[in-house]
Length: 348
Ligand SMILES: [Zn+2]
Image 1 (cartoon, rainbow, N blue to C red):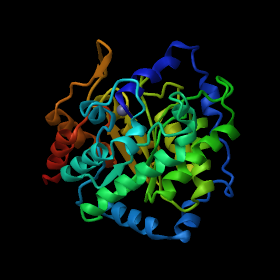
Image 2: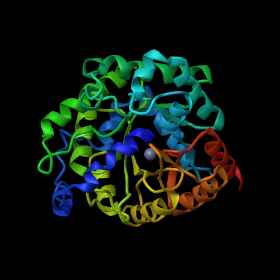
Image 3: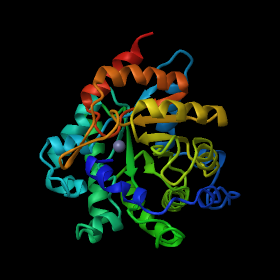
Image 4: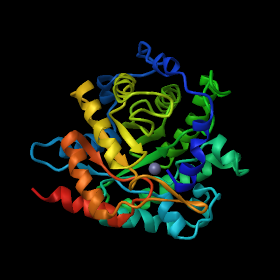
């Protein structure tokens, strides 16, 4: 997610205390027709599925290192001149070379799975900038840019289509109904798939009901595509909506996510126990850790992150030891952070 989105997201924190029962109550029996299980989806096969299985095998190989994801997109876009408050996804069309340069820097740092610049590329979020009618154009362009950069780098990394929160609050706390949320996410997912992503990565979620809508949307447009889902555990070890790591791993794996975990939040320190709790609750799950570069600190009109590459790298080893198979960084992390993590993980 971007620094801007991080700064605007916590509005809900000032709202009423989230009802934990509402969040927990979404862990209901799985309808296999809506969420085909792993075996059913594996059977669908396809190039994307094969590429995913190969990358996963590397990460799970005995004695092998975890798979490196990428770092922040927003932080890098701001450094390249994106103005605070502007939609990052517009740069997929207006400044494609700047976006590609960021992808390239992460690929050079060793990232094996990279996220498209489409975090806020849904109708509700883009609508805040008058861009609701450009969802398909901007998401597809984001996928094509990353695909082009991955191909230029030899084509071995995976292109992950990034889907962030809708920007609305799900009923009953908010006004966004399940069916509308599915429509919103399906429009974005269809554009990402049309642009050629290998994987869809749903990230920075707080509400299980919203993840469920996003998973259902992805399954509707691409039933067999590999799916990663990560939530943000930034409120005393739980998400802002009160979802515990154990609830998250149980629900997301039941809905057929290929890998689950945590991203964003208050830095690696807080994510280590989250990953450990997920590992305890679901010993067989493939886990993902993509923490911010430390605790967000407000400075003027910006949020800054102060963890150094060396500190992130040291914590990456602890996240690995806690059970993470995929490692990367979120807000505040740069290619320098990712290169340091890659170096630390490569040491025996
Ligand atoms: Zn973040």
